[in-house]
Length: 197
Image (cartoon, rainbow, N blue to C red; front, side, top):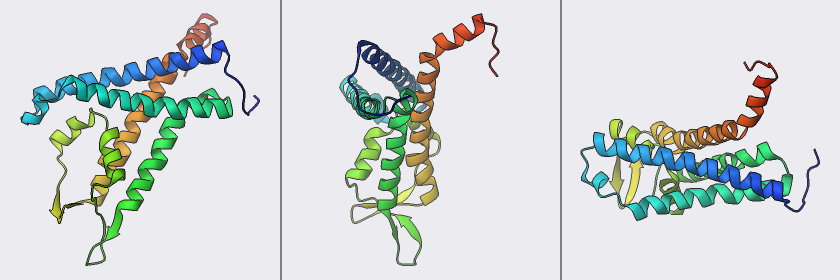
């Protein structure tokens, strides 16, 4: 397979639109299900104030964040699999840069995260999937505020909730998109009596 710049043809554009629709439909479905579940399990009045415009903003933002690296990487590499997972790779880099940038030591020399709600932390909040609200409802996040700076009680827990779980969510959505998009291939293999392990 040749790697390099090229113009998109009709097949490329059709494939890219198909991938974007599949990925965003899965994200929409999971976000909708998570909002409904949160309304049933949460006692918080903020859950009931979720409005359509906020959800539409988040979904549009996630869609844009997926489409841009996907299209650019496909244009630059002409590699479908890498392009599909480029969003997850980019998010992994961004999340870890934000996490490492937020690390600091306290007065006792203990490594902690100090979140002063800079743009990096706001990015984590904006890109956090709605479905993780279910996790936060059962295992709330603890910490303290000191002069407007949030200090998480547990750095490892912060890392798991705000870095690993969103990355896992996006990886799963991308993997499901890959499976759905390749369903034609799986169907053809079954017709040809191939077995898939």
